[in-house]
Length: 311
Ligand SMILES: Nc1ncnc2c1ncn2[C@@H]1O[C@H](COP(=O)(O)OP(=O)(O)O)[C@@H](O)[C@H]1O
Ligand SMILES: O=P(O)(O)OC[C@H]1O[C@](O)(COP(=O)(O)O)[C@@H](O)[C@@H]1O
Image (tube, rainbow, N blue to C red):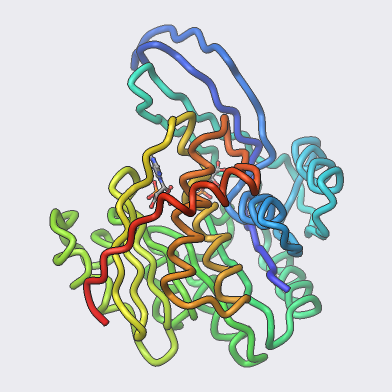
């Protein structure tokens, strides 16, 4: 069973504008809403891939109900800890050049006792065969060391964690050596306090420093430049797939879903890379944060190219 944990879910509002004017009036078109937040998107993608998951985290107010209803409607098993306030709405604006501007709200306040309730819920659902996906930002009130503490505590119960976070959450979380991680190139550089590496070799050099006796899989996503897959088995580079881009929001989450499924199904690194590339490219072919249909993902798999950098 894959358990997805979203501390700070969101209703994702995606809209188009010809040119985004900072400090001026912008009239949005093609506005659409999706139940989102990183873990929620991972669960939705897993469903598209034909896999069940259990979605949990924090929800609040009427926006929280919208997300819960959406998961129920899709048939995704879920149980959230309910807190005061209202789940956030995040605005994603794409201009005519398909450049994305994201405006993410902070989300409702969460007390430490709510975090305790969440940890108990996760432990009730997960067992040593489970992968727990910890992804995204946390709500105000939650400390940056939370993922680090949760990874350590889940490990005591034999549960493996896949971490997808940025900034301090990532920095702290890494210290507890999660089983798998998916930084993008910016997050990787931020972690090491360096400028974004330009070459694949330099990116690999940073990424391999994060592999260790417990962190067995490092996937570095590079947006329109593809992704790197590092494990003790091999180091692989996959160039980006040629697709008709609709929205890249949720592409990272799609990749995380494919990683979790690949690990659960014990795929080889090469098979896992193919699934990740096809699933994330598929997410880019849909509007908003919707995952692609399984047939689309299957077709995209044929386009994946793999360059072996080591192993
Ligand atoms: N324009 C694109 N065309 C095809 N695939 C893409 C595109 N943008 C992203 N992807 C795929 O999605 C993956 C994750 O995207 P990325 O933007 O790196 O994630 P994140 O949102 O986590 O930063 C990429 O590694 C790539 O496989
Ligand atoms: O928790 P954060 O870091 O604020 O990110 C939340 C946002 O990320 C998303 O999950 C999309 O993430 P990706 O584009 O990285 O896949 C949106 O659904 C959501 O609004």
